Length: 247
Image (cartoon, rainbow, N blue to C red; front, side, top):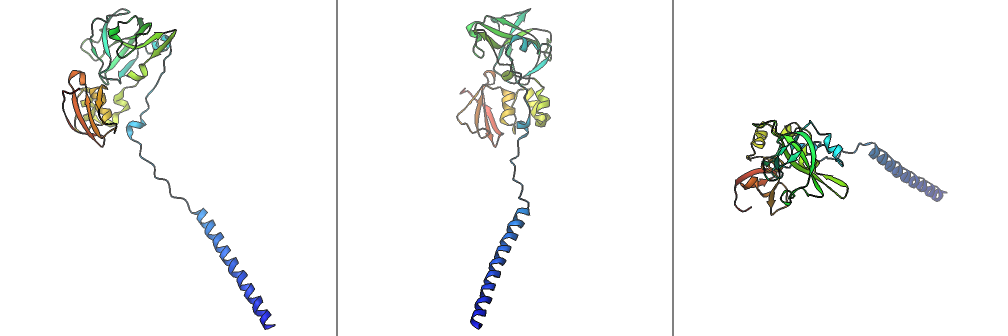
């Protein structure tokens, strides 16, 4: 009997131990579920990347003409040559200038015209080119009419580049976080220490070249309308710049 009692007591203790371990495991599991998980660390988004840039995706002349009477601003600085215009006709034989970054234009109308090969470097000629008629309200002659290629017609279809060439909202407001010093440099089309690549590109133009694809950490040479400037970026800030003759 004593031996049987010992076995019974031993078995009971073993059951209690197993039950205790199981209860402890259940408690830990429930407690772990009730403990809030640590919030994930979110990568900070740069202010520039939070800017919303409108896209209108025009596919017809009627779509383009919705801009008539509206101001727009140049995004693709240093690329688009423009010509004097009279009425609905552009004089491709004379280049009035090149559109500069953040420059304000007043849209007057859109016309179609057969373009010479010399005017199809940036925008194809197609069957006929689409030109935007505009004025420069902040120039010395704010009523003078100009024309710039913004698309073309071919095989019954239109292709427009307005979304790629222009801002539909004032970039001074879109990128107001750049601050007055940066905007003074951009509007005067100069580079200063501390500017980012995006700021420098708007100031000096999009025509550039670099031997590196590491954005923000490289040397970039900007054509700058025939006066090349080599700009060094470190951590997306201008650390040095100089005139360059190798463009």
